[in-house]
Image (cartoon, rainbow, N blue to C red; front, side, top):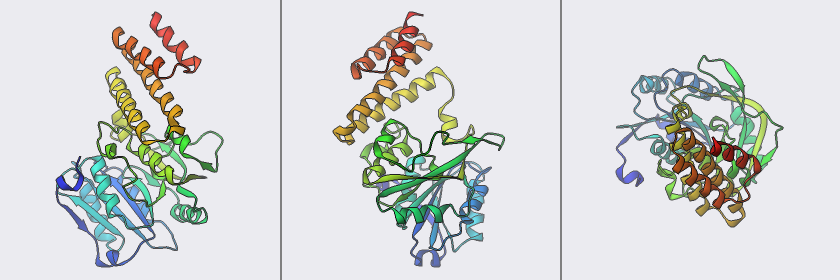
Length: 326
């Protein structure tokens, strides 16, 4: 994707006083087909109580439902707070994120998707205060509730012993950051690899964003439940995990591709972690092909996983060799 060269026109609705004010924090809200959720999302974002200036950058990506209409109504109600970005046509998740990020003027950027919400009016103040106290942090995260289809709280995201600080190596192994919990220093988009904008090569853009950001500092964690992440069929993850063998294969192939690309960007100190993740993707592909009845591809990826990481943990081998014999 070549970015702005092929981008359709984007209209910005904002009062002059918003543009005249220099914000410390930009709240970046991406939304598409979120008519059931966007009102609660904006209410929680606009309820923030801070002692610093904030702007709310809302990118409505040409939804097929009433999301744009709802966003327009909120912008009319809060013209001094909301900068509403309206592309002429649907841009897609990554390009809409790029448009919104480029529009953000704050020293810090708080991420929020249109189907998630913030629960505490002090969320931004707490995170920005923490980032100001810790210049060595590149981003700050917190715990969130997980909300299911029926709008009930299911659980919290972090269930293990919390750590006050995480580092880049922790992100290479797995993504443990709920997007709605993240406030990051605005380092611009140049820190991202070129392939970040290609959805085929980057099935996990939030993960790659955090790995890239964490190259410039630690990740601070606040052990408080300040937001909520919704799990529903229309969400990014709900639509990705369809439960089919074919879906598993597509997802794991993309994961393998992403880690091959990621290995090119990271230093040698992360080579072992990337290798483990590539091997794990191969082993998962072997099992998925086994479930689909394709023994040739099963053997191919089992061997590829072993060649990638001969020292793979024993549970991997026990699981996949057992499936081989069936």
